[in-house]
Length: 210
Image (cartoon, rainbow, N blue to C red; front, side):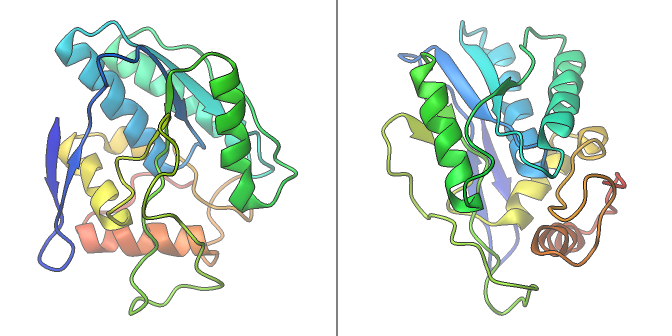
């Protein structure tokens, strides 16, 4: 599937596909908006193509309630698409610096037999859009042959638009982006600010309160 997202200045085509030569697929699911829509799109792609891929969600159980929200995301996708999808598998080391947590989960998932893993990470917002705190250093490329990141070259405005293109505002409602509290949104941390900025650019209202 190819999605044409964005407007002048940040247009980007997002391709969602499952490699036919690698059937055991892991998806790192944080409970946030980006990994949630990625998981949904991958499961939809599997359904529409009739492929035999086994998709397994993995989660690093961070202190922001990641396992709780990841479980809610997986349950939603399973019911929405009436598809086979295991509960999230706990991997990685949440006590590591946040920049290393996902990588530790990836190593565990590959060790468990996955042929490849998907991440929902995307670029940081352009510097002309000020956000609180220090911008996280997100990669603009993937270093490993067994790791795929379909959103790596676009920013959160593009990934948020997938919710409208796929008509999945109900999925957005169960996601949780805030890193400062387990329930609700603090509204001031980087992730809350980035989410609000991207949704405003897409001209819709956040469907959830998390």
